[in-house]
Length: 335
Image 1: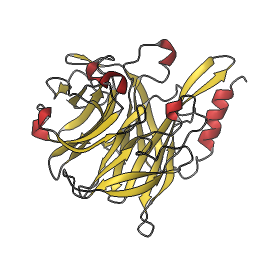
Image 2: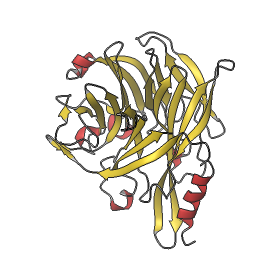
Image 3: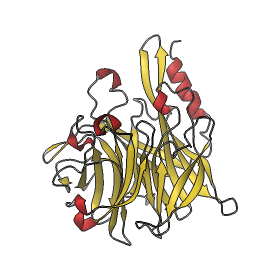
């Protein structure tokens, strides 16, 4: 059993090392402070040149306030004392993703609600809000409202394409799609995001995790989307696993893959190709955390495009879960 966990992770990494489109730049865990508190629960990011990084935090600053979220603007990642909180008080949603639409000057947000606190089934919403109204969340317009019926599995992934199309992805599938025997879920594409407009429904081959330790992780987890162009997305998928090691005992790890999803004009469905494997111990010697947010950011000095990924610490306080529940910033670079 000795070293079995490291061996398995290395084997998983080697399965698809060929053909990856991104190279590793850096990985940092952090617990910075900002003006007025500590940064925790970072679940979504988006970079807007000339403005900075938009960052959303779920749970509104406290583990007990699971149905609240805040929006921040910061000049850098990891965020520090320069960050400004744009929401005067927490919004009544557990925010998961943020995307800025420059064509319409709108901010799109995805949000989950936890059934234990809400007294209802898990529900999820997609909101649209004028950038100038971020301090007045009551002005938010609902594009989508859905009861998932699956614990902690709502909408986390949003993407805005260059032409202004909005893509929305369920974490493990819409109603009737989450069965382990079903290999396909559907992304929604709003060609014109507005209340009442009916989106297209496009099939996507999701990863299922039948051997996942936690029941809720078995259906899989689409954590984030990011547009490359109007018909190509980056899709971040991840799940928790627990390994038993005779030296370290029970060890929780996150398994994560980054895929390029290409929309096939003939079939009308997505086909995906793995472009980065996060479970390479040679690159992530300290492991990866609860990866949730993803955005294009400032390029390298050589002009290569860079991808920034952040992990949500879930306001965790239990020592046995701290290996996966920390803030983390990962930077990748296009080849």
